[in-house]
Image 1 (cartoon, chains in turn red, brown):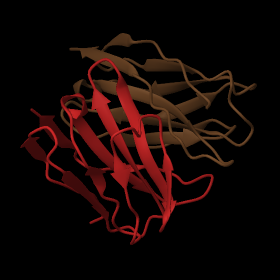
Image 2 (image 1 turned 30 degrees about the vertical axis):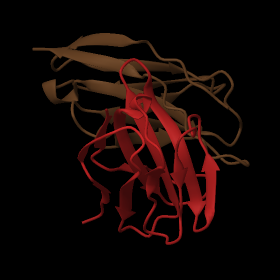
Image 3 (image 1 turned 60 degrees about the vertical axis):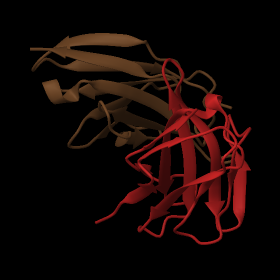
Length: 114
Length: 111
């Protein structure tokens, strides 16, 4: 089954404790991206990647890092989480190129930073 | 970055058609118009996309204005399961592949 898998789905952590949210897709997609969703602000793009070793900042990259060492994986790294990073995070993937068809989204990871 | 404008909310009755508008006056020639929806407690899901011509699929229809500065997502017969937030986004070529979702339109469907 074609899917985007995120882990963990729920996480409560404390300020400053490094964490990684993993994202994996099994569709051989070139494009992957991360979003955060906050009440009243909609979905905002954090980072995206057009292919292996190619990453770019979205609208809200501050406080986040990503890597794309393999095509299937695109982890989101919070080196020193802060309470303002408490949010619902979504990973998405699609084929590359201009007309890339649909984005496939993961089920989301709810992160709480105390 | 090309942005879209949608109404914050709309309401419909079950089994009636729904027309969800989207304005994208800064659209470029290579931008595709995509629609996604997000059901409660789920990730967004793809609905439909198009470039210039109107498009139909099993979920909905997409009507694109001749000047491409606006589009309308049409749900032909709304059901209670169509209650969701609908996002209109532009996706195109060029040097960037940023995708700006915005806050979307919250569609309420009344029985």
